[in-house]
Image 1: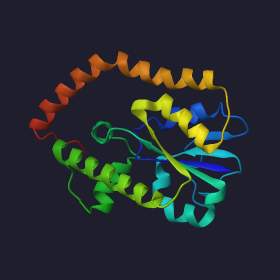
Image 2 (image 1 turned 45 degrees about the vertical axis):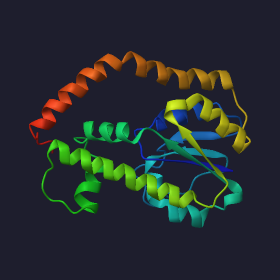
Image 3 (image 1 turned 135 degrees about the horizontal axis):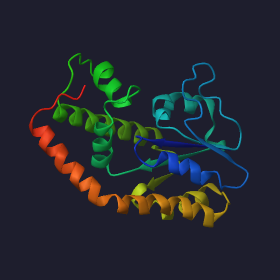
Image 4 (image 1 turned 180 degrees about the vertical axis):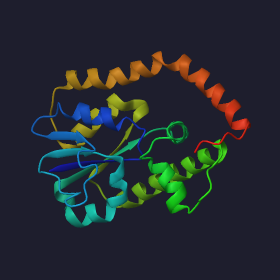
Length: 205
């Protein structure tokens, strides 16, 4: 059996993989094949892979892995939060949303802050549409929402027929929830700063 986590990214995919290391009889990892060309989708038996780039290989996953031996997790977070998170990380060298803007949308010019956010929103919507289309008609999958991560994670385990150390898994998943609450005030301040920068059409190349 193999489990593939399909997601836009910026949706606790690293935490999900860490929690999966406490599932019995399964290996788990986050972006374990990053940088690979040959054998990019050759994952071992009894493995859980969490990698937001898997959404660009959906046709190949369908060809390589039979549904009877595969389970998919659609890891979901509020789309506006995902888009905002991606815009904050636009400057990163290996940026999937920047590649989307320049290569897929064929824009040569550097975007201002608002245009970059719009591109991030389109990226998120496009990836979500592709995942939903891929999963349509399949039964071997489940939605897991970041906003209800612990509850949905255990629903995933139950539907996939997996067992594990639920106490250890809960500790990992709740750690993310608690960090979010502690950072709430800082995020509010940062959001106000972003709004001021956006109004000035800041160049964020």
